[in-house]
Length: 405
Image (cartoon, rainbow, N blue to C red; front, side, top):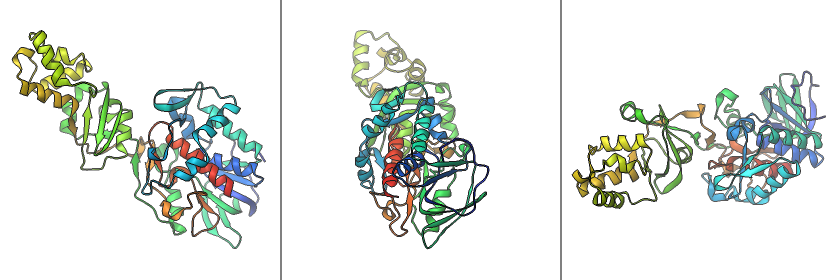
């Protein structure tokens, strides 16, 4: 058996394996490789025609495969402590060591993010090679039908015949990016076996703005600014991008995991600057300067112009009172926006929520009440920040299950 990337044409009915993994993504391939190298007979099935498609497109094609600052507080879950065990047992350093053993050149970008120097396909190839070393069988283009418990494990119905296994691992991901085949299959399977689900919603996703406000912001489409974006007590400092739909960019994607309908977000677009003090000083030095001229030293020109016009202050500084300057300060560093929604699963990088961690063992990812059934990766209610954290959860949870099956 080997981890070839071509769909299987035939299969023997009721063939038995130690482990069947549903899903040939990051977590599923990691789990299969570990289990196979521990001597287990392993089958991985996926309805896609190629393995690791989310890996391939991630990071602009270079795969932000982990983050040096991985820690439990970088993850959202109804049980924030659940991820601690897996993240400690298989760390970002462990996965980076694996990458380096395979000779995959990589580099650190901002905020501890590690990327391949060349192509995300190298990570997929690395995982396939690890699966090959473990004798893992990979079948692609195969849809899973009925799944049932048996006296010795599970029976999994495939279009080309049933297979049996002692351990069944669900690594089907969430609902994000449906055009790549994402579905809620894993959640349905969890409920079939009596596991609870937490609310699921798109995460790491652009936010949309109602049409009237969007029309006013139309001149800013395509403008990016380094900003601090807050929602409640949570705050991220990265780029914000104004779009024809609303707001995007890393800071917006991050805050989208915390924002809820009806709530607002606050933008500070010159977070390191006391804008009021800077404008007063500029007025004292040269009151004949236009407000937008000074704002353009702090903000992109189009943004400076829009704010000056929106606040009715497109005049020389000498003509503006302290009260107006304070209003401009608030417009720059406390701009309150109430999104009406997000762009949804179509563009969401991950799904927030999923299989309730109360029903899983944190060391093995095994269902507490269904021996031999495991849920790993994005399908579980553990969602990381932007920047490689969700891949690290895939590696960590996959590795832990791979040691247990």
